[in-house]
Structure formats: C-alpha cells, structure tokens
Image (tube, rainbow, N blue to C red; front, side, top):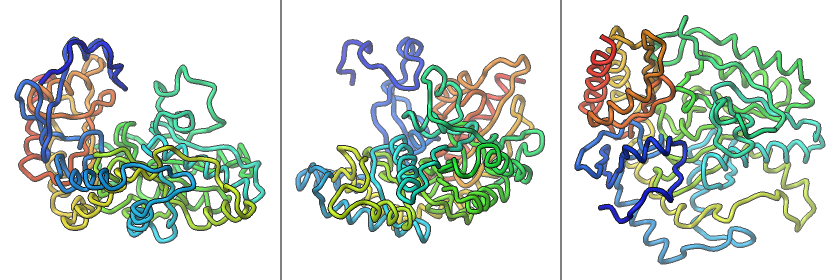
Length: 437
C-alpha cells in the first residue's frame, strides 16, 4: 500500500527517472519466482531480481537467521574487533572456492569487491618490490561496478563517459561475434584468438607495468557475452607467463548461475582472485567478498612490520554480522537443495532448448546461453532501439526481464521449473510476432 505522497525525493539508480515516475512499476511483495505489483499482477521474475536472488524470494530460513543475529549481535566494528560469525562465514565460503583461494576480504557489494581486488593487486605488487606494476587491463562490454576503479576497468561507455580522468587502464576486445557464433548453445566455438590481444597489450605497455587483468567469465550487463572455447585458459596462460595477476569478476556468475559454485570451476581455470556478491546472500542483505590466493595474502601481510596494519583498506560494514547470518543461511539452502549444480542438469538443458526454439522468430538475430543465464538479441528492420519496448511489453504480459540495448537478458532463480521457462519462451515469441511480423 502506498505510504508516500510524492515520488520526487527518491533519485533512482540506473533508471530513466522522469519516464519511470510518469508510468511507475511498483513491486509490493515477492515469493519464490514471482513478483506481485501494486495493481495485483503476478509477474515472473526472469532475472532473479538483479542477477542475485538465486534461491528465490521470501526464504524464511534467511529472514529468521537475520532476525536472530540482530538480537544477538547487530553490529560491532570490524576494525580491530572480531565476531565469531564473520570467521565462520569466511571458513564456509572457501569450501566452494578454487583450491588456492582461501582468504576472504569482505565488502558490501560487487562494486566494492572489485575496488578491493584492484587495491589488493596493487598492494601485492608493492609488497614484493614491483611497484612499477600499476596498470590494469579490462575488457570492452565489461561491467565491474560503479566506483572509480570499476568504471576504469569496465568497458561500458555510458558508465565511463563524463566521469574522467580514470585509472591507467587498457582494454581487451569483447568476444561477441554474431557473424560466426550466432545461436551458439553453450560456449561459442569461434574467438579464442581474441585472447591473444592480451599478448599484444603486454608487448605494448610492458609486462613490468601491468598489475592485473580483470574479466567477467561471462559478461552480464554488457549483454551476456560468453567466452569462446579455450579463451579463459589462454588468458590464464598469458598472465602466468608474464607475472600478471588474473582477476575473475564473478559477481554474476558465482553461486550456481552456470551449474557450479563459480565459473572458475565450470571452465576449469583458476584465477588469482575472484570477486563475489549478489547470490552470496541470495540478495537479501548487502554483502560482497574478494577470494584471494594464499600467496597474495601472505606476501602483503608479511611485508608489513609486526603489529602494524598490513592493508589500509576496509568498510564500516565489512563482514556485517547480520549479512553474515544471511549468507550462512543461504549456503545452507544451496547445499540442502542442490542449487549450485542444478543449472548444469536437466533444467539447464531444458532452458537451453526452449530458448533456442525461438530461432526463426521475426526480429530475433541471436540466442546465447550457458547454465541459467541467457540472452535473446533483436534487430528492428529500421535499426531503431527496441530492447526497452520489449522489456515493457514483457512486464505488461507478466514477465520481468532486463534490457541491455536490443538484448534481453535472463538469469532466473535457480529454483525455476519447466512451466516457468515455457512462460518465458511463449511470451518472447508472441512479442516478436506482434512487433516484427
């Protein structure tokens, strides 16, 4: 129920504020895979909120754990004080990470996790006497949050434009190639050679100046861009050869989205750091984390004099007790319901087949997918932008999706069932025929 008189006071993020407030879409409650708006409509959440509500909405187990923790210990400073639940959560988390990533630095979001990872990379290079390695390499179409480090390594022009000057960064080319890879099921076959552009950048700048390379294993906000077969392994080989850290931004791909805890395991590539957020607490409480290779932690910590602060970085809410409680309860659900592997099984196969059945529908020029993440790309005959219009029509037909230009992105809750996938595909097909036939 509306408890306010005006929408004027809330400056909404990543939103066309004037357009939204002229035709607002207000969600009042959510449960399972469903959203319920203020008009009484039931809407299928095909993006798990914002790529984060992996176990579905309204999980009582998480809410109860948060309430109990708030009554026991709601907050204490993470600077020079500790609490048991923070150490417990870190210990539980590293059971899911690659073998050598056993250190956890807590933040409050994916943006902060990225910022922390970049600073850890610089601290590591300085601690081992290689302070000249200060440069970062990002990638086109990448989204690494909205802080200054994140937009520097990011590759989405609107997020960068108008906020410079930024950090010294160069960018790899993106791997989206519709001419060779349209309608790929799983990883695209063509494009491993694009990883070799990293070798060119290393030769141009000099390996002695490059601290780290950061990539999303699967680009999310850039339009669900999948890595070609062998591409990530090639990046790993080049980074190892030139003594450059490799950071995987797994804020989206972490926690079961691809059918494994992390894309690192799915694609059998171990980076030096992984950034995480979103699904780490099922989106219920703000939380981010950087998983760090042991040798990086040891180098930074051991370089500082005994009794002094080793890394001058952190947040008031790092390892917030209530967020840790939400995270522990989320892990319990993931484990008990087998959600972290579900996308690699029958439901992932059904999702793939159903979405690819849209091939041949008018206006659709590509479908791409991996696990329970996918994109359907459109092209209007007159070249006009149609993604936002499709997103609006989906909402009107009871489906919540994400538009990225002319790309409609999907990342449904991991609890999705076949009938929900059928609704997604039926809705997309009917809109394609309505708009383009």
